[in-house]
Image 1 (cartoon, rainbow, N blue to C red):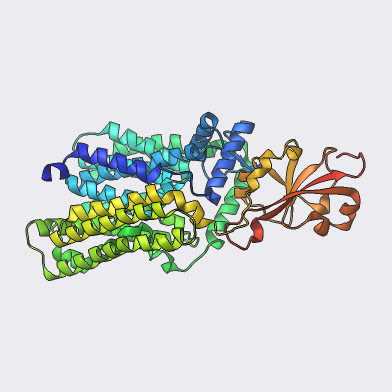
Image 2: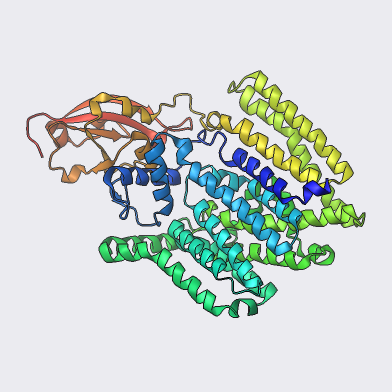
Length: 550
């Protein structure tokens, strides 16, 4: 068993299999969210218009975020089709997998222990929000994965006595790719906290001694990171300035919350929540952890990251993704401490108390999963009894195994059982996610407009005073312009297709009702809730009552 625990090849194979389960299996079952829709719409317009250097989203400049993830999405869309959601999300799964392996590499270099690297990677890949982001084609997983790779290479370069020009070069490339993925986000939320923690714990001498290599890193990074922003500034100055003004205003005035908003951050890890809370008990760790230096580094990296995020006025749950990286290291410190003291039979009373609290809570949750599935799936007629029985047998078996590991104080067995519980959820429950999310019996997909031949050649519009979300722009398959009734100067002879919240015959101004003929084609209920609200849309064809054209 010890041979398997410390065998890197077995670690790599295990992590590879678990990454497939975590990020790729049934990754097309969850509905496309707002951030994904923005990425997909922008990628679609890249393919349709060839505007790779000046991206647009629904016809408007999309310059708020650098385009690297969208370029990658567009390439996959070109080869696998815009309707293949699974393949559009595939690159995000690859980046999430790279994040896991970068974690293994960095943790091993920092702790010098393979088992700690393995546990860190297992904790990371089974953390709830990491799994979620790895299954959705958003920008965040790109910038933070590239950044962790850069951190790994920089740490190696700083800690070795050799010149390490290759490692510095590799780090500069990854830093540049991170910036091209989401600008300075990962630099602020992941790299800066790492750098401060590293200097506090290890000092800055090893960094400063290699200033020539650092200059190379900064120079090469600047070339990779800033060529696109410079191009936009030089070629599209007005649009660039407008975006800067909008984004700076958003950071100060949009999604603002109090300073303590992010301090629930351990919950984002899901199954590891209680372990992270326990690992944050600094006095306990200082008094008991043999590897306190590595613990202090992980603790500082976590806390500084949360503090820096908390300082910013704009706060979103998605911004907590980089915090899960150091928290995986932090939880590992507690788990490895338990593994070491139980192996040597040197556990104190406080160790046993914290161990049993953490492990028993996880076991109880595992035991409760079949009952939860019964109420949310079988009882609500979403799935068959046979699937419920199969999943129940698996989770009750895992519960029994957890009890065995808890009794024998087998930390590695407990960690594996927790990871397997997550893997089964991803492979067995994830396909049911759409049914769980959609609580609207009258749901009617707006994507069906693609098969309505009457409107295929018409331009799409929505009333200027109504919202038309980007998810819907993605669903309908092409741009949806804004029809301003107050400045209307006419429509094409063939007419236009209009998506509206209410029937146009009841809401269109009287002067336009006299001017245009309205034909109601269909209506769509895109809401996953029982109350449709802004996701309810009528589709109408609007034509001239005479032959006048625009």
